[in-house]
Amino acid sequence: MGVLNNSLPDIGPVRAVDSAIGWGRKSSIWPMTFGIACCAIEMMAVYAATFDLDRFGAGVPRATPRQSDLIIVPGTVNAKMAVRVKRLYDQMSEPRYVIAMGACVCGGGPYVKWGYNTVKGVHKIIPVDIFVPGCPPRPEALMDGILKLREKVGRNQVFARQAQTAADMDGRYAAAK
Amino acid sequence: MNETDIHSKLAGAVVSGVGALDESAKDPFVVVDPGSLVPAVTFLKNDADCRMEMLNCVTAVEREDCIEVVYHLSSVTHRHSLTLKTRVERPAGGTHESWIPEVPSVAALYASADWHEREQWDLLGVRFTDHPDHRRILLPEEWIGHPLRKDYVYPHEHGGMPLDLDAVPLYERDEATPSEPAAPRPSGTPLVQPPNPNSDRPDAGGVAPADSDGDLRSIKPGSNDGGGH
Image 1 (cartoon, rainbow over the protein chains, first blue to last red):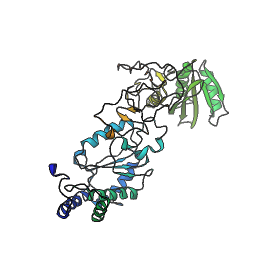
Image 2 (cartoon, each protein chain N blue to C red):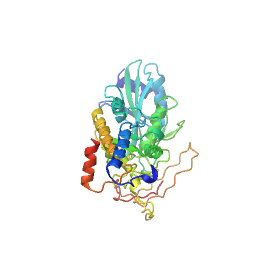
Image 3 (tube, one colour):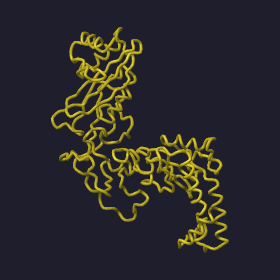
């Protein structure tokens, strides 16, 4: 979208175009095929038939970061893995979103004090949109995180200027729901 | 056979270096000298009455006066087991940096010992002489030090990735203004990687510490020194 990004006034027609784009984006969040540790097992359950993430358009894990919009980081990020996580995130094209799944990824978890090798939260490396705590989180919790991310993606402003006031944001929250 | 019988056979067969059976522990064990370890294990494996086909695990314990390596041997044929220990005394002032205990490898007898011994090298810094592939197994190869030693000092970062709880996230660091030069590591932090005889990789550099204050977590909040690796 280039030069027009966040440059038009925040008025009805522009907002309508933005919400159409947001609807398209939030309805086809493609996560990356990526699992680190035990949280990945719960994540696989979310993809599978019982929980069926595809109901929300997010059930098509892509095998490459270049096609994905979302990276779910499910499991302890240690020093060896952190380099790879950073590289994968850098390879994703924008807009890109990050869900930190599980206690280790949200802040170190059980390794917070004596984990000589653990990054104390993946937000030390890449910016995180949604934190899903739990050890590991139930599949419902991850789904809730993805629904929260959908809300966030849906109210993203593409062309309109960023909201300046809280009342502005409230209006956008209501429109996104 | 129970442990007593196995121990009496072992003590009769291996000439020296086999200690008494300690039955006070829930799992009775025999302490053997490092020099007698390979003959003792060879005997336990090959003797028809012992027939210890399986080496369940190799682990190590750091104590104040020694590091002991523990071998759990068991026999599927005879359904008995025995715990062997071998101890390397800590020399005076033996620290993480200055002291690497050496124990003969049993990887030639048991394939399972290969990775288990590599793990003990990686985490506790026990060198197994004559090991076929003496490398780290879990941590990155360029890692410095052996984390499960009591006097290990925690790194602030590795490969550019912050490991501190209070580290500033990478994407919030101001790249435009050059940060002040990295503070020298606290005393005791530079851990010298002991040279690996089986590796042609150049040794990791490091400065010998002036003294060791024993404070494992002497990490200043917000400090982010990138050196040391």
